[in-house]
Every structure is written in C-alpha cells, then in structure tokens.
Length: 297
Image (cartoon, rainbow, N blue to C red; front, side):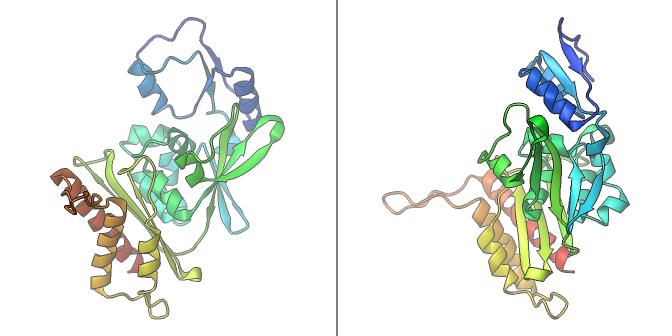
C-alpha cells in the first residue's frame, strides 16, 4: 500500500492466468507487474518510481502453490514468504523455508513473494543464496503460451534477462532429501536486512556440498573450490563425520574466496583490508562454518 495518491490516468489490470498477465504486459510495454509490492511500493513511496500502469498478479492462483515433478518441486512465483515458512514446506525444502522465515517482519512475509524476491534481485534477498546453492531454474512465461527455462544464477548474474512481456512463472528446485541450512547476520537484533548470509546444501547422492554466500556482492557467490575441497574430507559412509578443524578451515576458505585479499602492488607490498571488510570476512567465515556443521550433524 502507498500513502501517495496514484497518478491521473494510471491503469491497473488484474489478470487471472499467467498468459493473461503476459498479454497485458505485452499490450502495455510500460506497465509494471506487482505481486506483494514490498519493493515496488517502497520505490513508489520514495519517489524513485512512478509506473504509468500496473499488472497485478495476486489473482493468478496457478502461481500461488507448488507441485511435484520428476524429482523436483515446481514452486509458483506467487508463493509468499509466510507460506514457504510453514512446516509442510519446511519438510520439502528446509533452507528455503528458513530463508522465508528470516525475510523480515510479518507484514513483509505475508505480502512478499518468491518471484518478487528473484525479479528485484536485491543483493540482500534471503531466498537468492538458497536458490543458487540448490541450482534452481526458472520457468519463464512468454507470449502465446511460450515457456523457456533458465538457471536462476544466469538471471541474477545478467547472463540471461527477461524479455519484453515475460514473467517468472515457476521455480524448479531439485528435491535432494538431505540436510540444508540457511543462516544470516543482520546489523541489528530482530528481523532485518542481511549483512551476510550463507546457504549450505548437502548432496549425498553425489557426495557433494553446495554453498552460496549472499548479501556481500550484487549476486550470490559460489565458492566452488571450497565446496569440492571439503566434500573430500567428509566421511559419507560413516554418518557424514568430519574433524572440527576442517569445519573451521572451510569457513575461512569460503570467506577468503568471497572476500579475497587485495592483489600485491608493483613493489610487492600487499595492502591490508579495511577493518569493516575484515569484520565482514570473519562474519562470512563464522556463518559458513556453522552452516556446514549444522548440516552435517
């Protein structure tokens, strides 16, 4: 909701299907889609955005639930954080449910949606590192019923973008049936924006570890070398045992990969990182260490 009066002549379209929404966006190229509006209305209220038309997605029931499909969960883009935080969803994708419960105060969780979190691509979006670690893919709805699939990491990195009239319809997430953990650090007590976040997902079938770090860069970061290194140290046949020293080393490995030291100068000297950056690196190390420890336990 907004306290500002809408501009004169502003139109609002309320489609009931995904294809109707795509058709409305195609007919009105300047229209802005809106679901929960937690980011959009903040931009409107601050004067950063004055959309000439809106396409409301709240009446599209097909994107407000989920279904099983070939070992994956097909999540509707209209799923709210509050819905994803419930126990039945947490049993399905624990890390995504944890990120949804940490997404902010109740009014944000009740309105904000999974698709909006992805489309706005804010670095502090709590769902983004989880989706990156899960290697989720997006099903994009286009004109005339067209559908195409792209990795969520491609959209966040700008490798592939939404075309005119397209909408994020669904998110396809593999069901690994293995421990997953999401942790975040905020600048204050209680729900708040992430200073840093870490998602760790185990993949026992491939004897792999997936990790993604959020909030410290424009997109989630995957420390692939750290993932491969620590996966070799886990005793997958003996309760996923690992020595405590390896957990500490993993945290430091992840932090150094995501927040590296400055390159040496021409004279061979190395500039020290500022204290605030060093503190952030220690925070990432602690989150990664704790997340992997909880997943393995």
